Amino acid sequence: MMLTVDQARTRILDAVSRMPAKKCGIVDSLGCILAQSVYAGENIPPFDNSAMDGYALIASDVETSSDENPVTLDVIETIPAGYAPVKQVKNGQATRIMTGAMMPGGADSVVMVEKTEAKEGGVDIFDSAAKAQNVRFVGESVKTGDLVMSAGKVIRPQEIAMLASLNISEIDIYQRPKVAVVSTGDELTPLGGELKPGKIRDSNRYGICAQLIEAGFEVIDKGICGDDVAELERTLRSALGQADVLITSGGVSVGDYDVVKIVLEKLGDINFWRVAMKPGKPQAFGIADGKPIFGLPGNPVSSLTVFELFVRPALFKMAGYTKLLRPTFKAVLETDIKNDTNRVNFMRAIIEKHNGRYHAKITGDQGSGILYSLVLANGLITIPVNQTIHAGETVDAQFFGDAF
Image 1 (cartoon, rainbow, N blue to C red):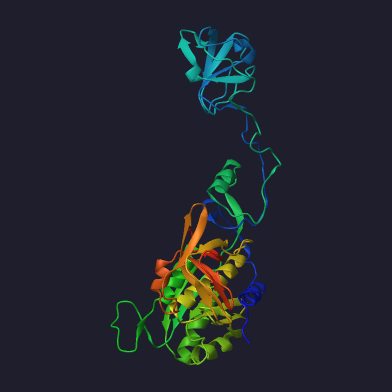
Image 2 (image 1 turned 30 degrees about the vertical axis):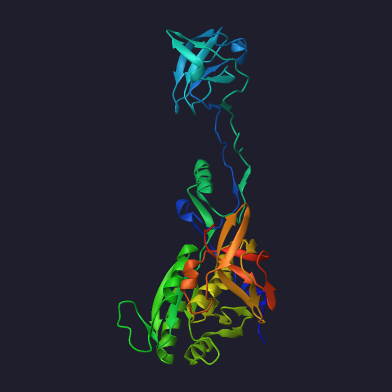
C-alpha cells in the first residue's frame, strides 16, 4: 500500500522535534529562529531629536513666515549629532541642529535648512512650522518594557539592527541541525575519476549538499560508500556521531541490492515506504539514536524532489520554523497534461507571470533520471491522481528557492 504525500509528510513531521536553543552573537543569528521573547530595556529613540538638518525653534514664532515675509530669529547655539544642547530656546530664538541631534529645551519644532537662510548672528525662516514638525520623540519607535519580538520570529537584518539598538549583543536562537550526507552504491564514480563501463558520476550528493546550504544548514559530506555492509555501517554510524540528521541517497527502491536496507535497519527504527508520487516513490525514513534518517531514491530528479517536499520541511521544523512549506499558488497551464496513474505527478516547469497571472509549461521529458529537466525549471507544478488538466486551466505551483 502506498502512502499519500500528505500522509508521508505528516509522519515525518510528527517524528522530528525542534532542536535545543543556544546563545549566539546577533550577527550570527541571521536566518535563525528566535527562542526567546525580546522586551525593550530602553526607549528608542532615547531622547527627542531632530529628523532634519535645520533649525529648532518655537513654532508659534514662525506662524506667519513665508518666502515674501521671512521671520528672523537669533541663533543661540549649534548642536551636532552626538552632543547635548546647553541652552534653552526662548521666543525669538533658534538653535542650528543636525539630523539626530538632541532637541534643545523650549523648542517644539524644526524647520529644514532648505527653508532658511543664515545671516550673521541669526537666520531667516521662509516657512511656517507646525508644532512637533520634523521632531522624533523619545520612545517613538519602542518604549521601555514593550514586547519588540516574540519567540519564533525569523531573524532578518532588520531584527539584528533592532537588537543592536536595544543594546543586545547576544540572543537565544534555536540551533540548526547539522546534516550528514552519504551517497551509496558501487556504481558511483567520484568527480575527476575515470568513468568506467557501468559507472555513473555521483551527482546526488552535490545537489543535496547544495539544497542544504541554500536552506541555511551545515553540511557534513561523508562522500561515497560502496555496497559493502561493514563499510556502509561504519560510515553511517560515523555520520550519526557527527550530525543531527543523516541523509543517504540510493538503495531504497524495490529490487535494489539490499545493502542499504540491511544497514539502515541495523541503525534504528527505519520504515521503507512507497509514496504515491512521481518522481520519488521509494523512500526510507526513521529514527536512530534520536536522530532522523532520510533514505532518498537514487534517481537524481527523485532525490532532489523528495528533499524539497519532505526533508526540507522536517529540517525547518527542527530549526524552529513554523512556516515549513514553500508557498503554493495557481498557474495557468499552457498545454494539456494527462496523469493516468494513481500517483501525484510533480512536474518540472517554467513558471512566468503574464498580465498579472502565472503561467506554467513543463520542461520536456519528465523522466526521473533526466536531471536537465530540473536545470531548465524554476518550479514544480502538481498534477493530481488520474486527472487531465487542459490548457487554460490552473494547477498548483511552487517556485524553487527564491525564483520568481
